[in-house]
Image 1 (cartoon, rainbow, N blue to C red):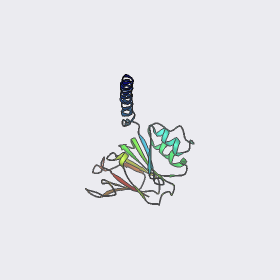
Image 2: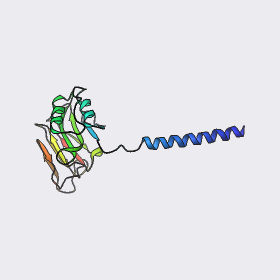
Image 3: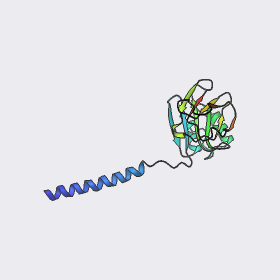
Image 4: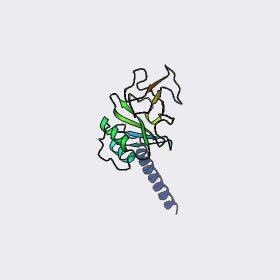
Length: 176
């Protein structure tokens, strides 16, 4: 009887070790390359995708499935024109010249309605931005629309690289 308990305890320990090892692997942070996220002001949730193609297919309800893996001007305009249920207000980019990982800001209310978000998934990574026609954004270097430096950077349209003083320092953004 004692032998069976010891064997069962050893088996449980081995199983726990295997599960913990598997859990640690499963919870590892996803690779940064190819990370494209969308923030919905309606749900106040961020959803991330491996490629811009997947993000576009999701926001367009499958209407646009041939977007490139990395965003370009034509793909962004196609996404904005075909988004279902939400207006694309702006897209923040990790790299200059509207390239690299992206963070898309959307709401069903459309441009003109005010929203803001802390950039937890994209904190200190904004180098460029694209703004939908008639939308606007303010990029802040502090969380909760605060600033430790020179205030905020405002961009109305169409977009481009952010100034060096706020490059890779954005922590929150308001958009309308």
